[in-house]
Image 1 (cartoon, rainbow, N blue to C red):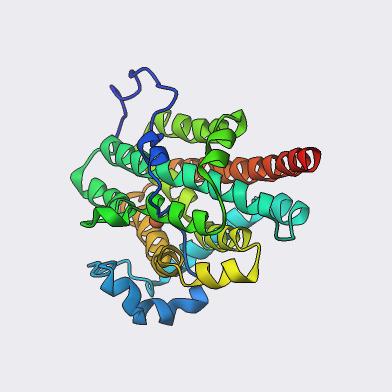
Image 2: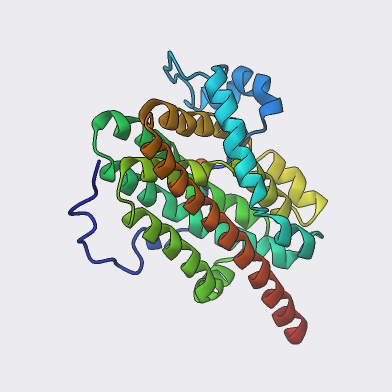
Length: 301
Ligand SMILES: [Fe+2]
């Protein structure tokens, strides 16, 4: 932008960004997540990610060790922690269950199928090619870079199927309205953004809980030891345990590089908070849909 004029005038379409083509396919891969800071050495050393082409970022200034990157990452993580995004989910559904695996598998697949559109849209909305350069990198990774067989939502679906998630469940749960409402919140936050700073902040809000997201998803799918053994070795999870720390660094560096005025910092944080609101709604929705699924299975079974 600086402004999003023109973009705002476009009539919102209900299912913008929903990848219905992915629904028809039975192939599989997924969305982005993260890696714990304590595993940093592992990330740097990771041949897995490098071999898959997830390396080679050229960053002369805002590296992982840059004091401002470290300080601001910590600040944003603290702000995210205060939202208690996962508290309800982990308190009500602490135990492994088939219902938890099914619902989290379906909801994450839907979200991951939506993200490439969202990231491309965000890249189109910012006002310079330099900003677009940084935004589009994550979208490119989500879309498998130069290998169409590695489109992440498809990779994730493959992992979900290993955990017993079926197309039937996907179609049935897709018709419930709460998951769609969470994505609508995200679409609206993006289309209502009035500045580059808000768009960039929204992207960091989406990335910041990525470590907890990926670990929560993996734990949810692993309702048995047998499934856990397979999924811990699955490419989707091995990859996402490697690459997400770079996504966070990248989006924090957008804040440092492009948001130098107080006004821009304020707008970035406004966007960031919208990202956190989405996650709160996503995991709250997952909690209630799992509960409904348990009641449904009890009645039928
Ligand atoms: Fe991904």
